[in-house]
Image (cartoon, rainbow, N blue to C red; front, side, top):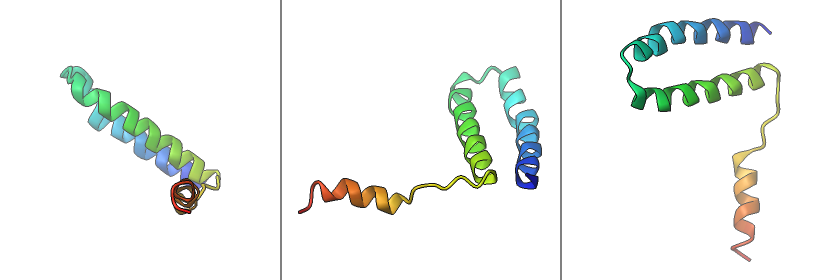
Length: 70
């Protein structure tokens, strides 16, 4: 839980130092990328903090490639 609290403080500071100035300056092109990127990173960090077990990318690629290579 300490991990989640530390990253929440970090993301709150990012919102005030990065996103709020972009919103004020109406930089819509940057916001279309920044907001989803921050949201995905926040969700991944919360999942890591809750000890969520991710599937190995190698295992996914092996299953995908086994259909092509026999």
